Length: 278
Image (tube, rainbow, N blue to C red; front, side, top):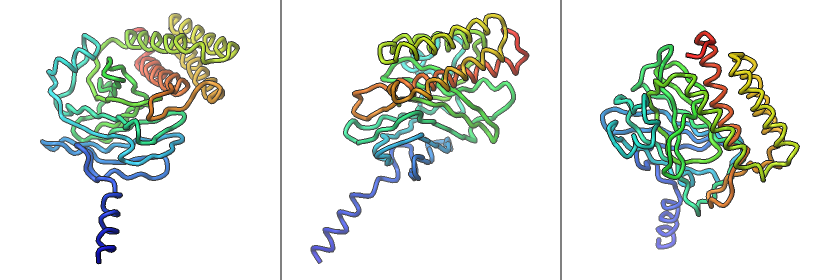
């Protein structure tokens, strides 16, 4: 009887908790985790985190939590763009994905975070966007797709931290300019980790993309950004493309591809709105 009791206790402890803070019934299948966010007041969402290639993926290894926040929280608002970006009252949810350092999780390539909530409506020209912040820093727009069925949104990342759905009514040309700046800064920051010939090719694609954008040739700008992302993916591996929970390396390729993807989203958004600099 003692042996049976000890065995049952071990099994119980080995099963991951099914209800982290605000997270219900996380399930891992292959390289994908699905879960439900459930918070007070009927606020909830379906959550999907899909990896290109993951090792050690479990609910506990992801360090998931979701909490309600105040849309007037000055601490959060100070980390958003200073004007024309707000936290919607219908979904004031801060999602945190902070894998514990000793959890053994690693992945290569991209991690895509998707949310689907019935608490927010989707309409043409919706200002809703998905923002991400790293290490308590500033939130940046990482939206790469939006869809109907209430509100669906997806953004990619080469790492993790905090995520917010916000209402962003900034002018689209200002958003695109910021995303160009961010991608150029990322590339420059990691120049030493990229072979010179590859770096030169990537820089040329960004120069061409920005020149096309400045000339209001939005389709050509999108094509150059797509070529940039394809070149990064082609050289992933020689460009560091692994993230580890130990926090000892930077997923350079993943961050570059994620930044290119959200830039492409905004360029397409502007092109579909009529092509002019709004």
